[in-house]
Length: 315
Image (cartoon, rainbow, N blue to C red; front, side, top):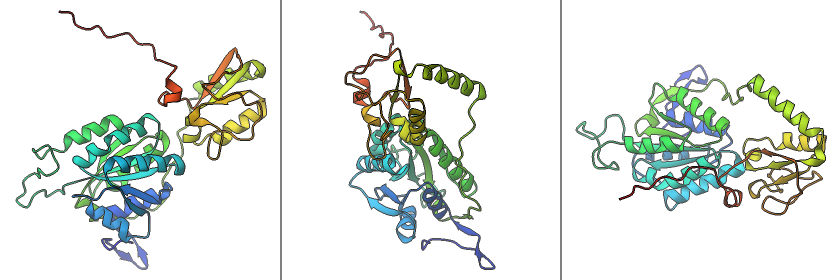
């Protein structure tokens, strides 16, 4: 536990913890044992909770963009990551890396520190790290475009919002954005009574039946049908299911560079592998793409989305 932890004893049971420790506990449930970031104003209380506690380790980075890319790489291997920045300059520095994680379905929890509820010593809004006006809304709106869910934490909503954000991160496999005021980090909340609910929502039965029908039809002629496996298969944890499918129906398959064969990659040890995407492949009447991504250079350099050209104004 961190030195800032506020505890309330009921017999021998600790019933309360700080918001920072609650968040660290939930990050641990996601398998995150390392947190990346850059120390700065408004996040020091949270970083103290990290370094003083027995949970995730702290890894400081030279700048926020480096931290964002480190978190991106960690999440691709471990399943999820956490990134800590201070609002304003820290947000802007990390935005490019977080946007890339959003484009490629990489789950990263972005924790952005803002001034506490009291703001400045005279009760006035803190202009520090803002655009000179004390308004931190512009940075939050930027991250509203490059994260799948956002929340501004208070002592009252922190447990519910942290749980919601972690669930959306896990199921959508995209970054989320938590605004953490400096004083909220050390405020007491009830300790979690149960683990995070990370079970996916049930599929729409009509869509599922339609997919199964199409797949069964393709499997009747596996010699003329191929499956193209992409990085999304691994990102969403469907590697074992795709392996079983290929083994059962004997369908030829190929993989993109993002989903190429190897440790922790899409498929391994399954026969009838065609050349990787980008090379010459056997002619097939039907190709099924699984876990497709249209962001990687080797996945997009030969493909373009059809769109009308914008009309330039004429003088």
